[in-house]
Image (cartoon, rainbow over the protein chains, first blue to last red):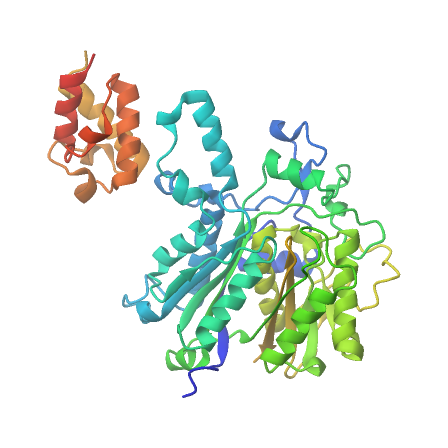
Length: 421
Length: 81
């Protein structure tokens, strides 16, 4: 057995998103072109210039008992719920090593990222400190706010002992986590790894901060039209929340236990812009380097690419830089790629984006269907690519591949590739 | 002044809220960590809630001595102002 370059497959998926409380309802929403964006009518949002968001369809505190939710930040609650779904979907019951989960804990890992961590916990505990005094600050504050909290709790949930990691790269965090996990399995460090991303930052302070960066859409009057990647009228992203995770497994291990396989996880491409702390590099140089890196480090061939889940957050600069980069590296092969910008429906989940979009990419290959991009009334003339608009589009039969892009403030670029089975 | 019964009832409510243990299971001989699923972090929550409810101060150094519900009841009765 070649232990340094093992085949990695996806054997389980789980999600809780603005479109649904699990991956099936999320996929139904994506395939049908449903928007999860709504107006924020809550009092706390009244003074904000941005009063729209894409909240989770299912409040996690309704599914988890109160003694649990008081110890877990909302971002971790999402991650734990998505993990339970994915773990069961992979045919595993109980923690690794138990009868229903015949997986060696020492060869089980967890890599679930968040871009911001427990920001609402931190803010709520600051309110407690100010209003009620230091003695009343929760002893759970640190484990709740640390950005590795979701990964650590997922690791506890499944009994992961091979390694629990939490790469942080703003909006690329979830994708970086999946890429890290693919490498854990591919290199032989682990047989089974739960990987993905989560975020829960719908709160006045993060919204005010992103809004003051001029990164968010201010289309408060038409919430469901606010997220419009590639459209000439796009004016920024809409903040979403939730989590998406996949179970990654060595093909050999999956076969041995008779697991159902969704697709192959081919690998990741990485690069950094080194251009500006928040602005994308306008020519797409960094993104192109990440795609090139992917092609050099995986068996992906440009000619087999049928689908792309784009980063496309609906910002004027970012959407274009991504397309330019893809054209530069893929050339004419980009013409055969059905591009979906699912943030038009889910909003932007920051560190959770790479998680739920990995789930979306895996399901697109599984169902052979590329979700539509909403609100694309007038395509930006500089967008020289085939964007799926209006309705979902069938993907070809036979062996096809898809990539999922995620980029983050700080110039982080992560590209993940998957192939149908 | 609260009676031992009042204090036990109050602690049972607090442990129920924090750890989800049914109030009737919170008995004098029960260990917080071994029987009631109250770990060291949650114990701090129990202590702070008890301080408020019974108007006592329980310094961190004394918390280690509160192994069972009975220990806590005795401590609170002795230190109530």
